[in-house]
Length: 145
Image (cartoon, rainbow, N blue to C red; front, side):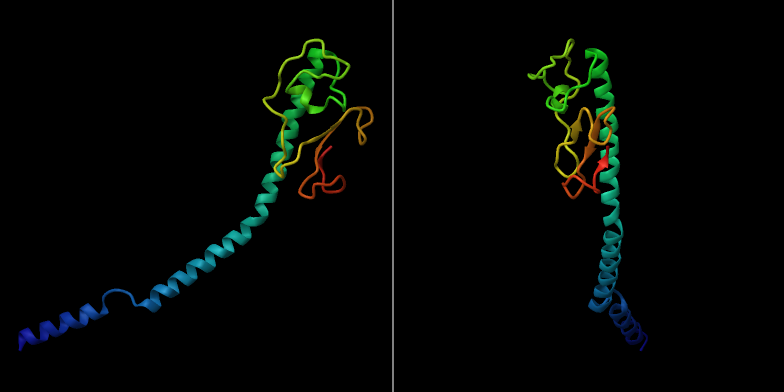
């Protein structure tokens, strides 16, 4: 009788060990809801990161423009644009001491080139430097200036 009881206990313990399919599916459902809500909450942070990158890029470009000005005693014209930081300008006025200051013309996080104007439309006594932003149109969504 002792052996019958121990084998019975072993069988009931074996049946109770492990998880049922329902329990596994429940846990997976809860995990998927949590992951989905985390992705939804972080989606807005991507836009903020892109805007911060634009601000950082504009500061870096502005520093290279100041270096260009110190070397050549003038800023690149609108026609020469930011390409003057990458290759010698073909248009007049030709730079006096041109040096390559950037590896390539910078592109904003949305795939557009930064807008450079000298003299500026928004800053007539200086230059404009900005990104068109996510909209890709000149207007309120611009970042920089």
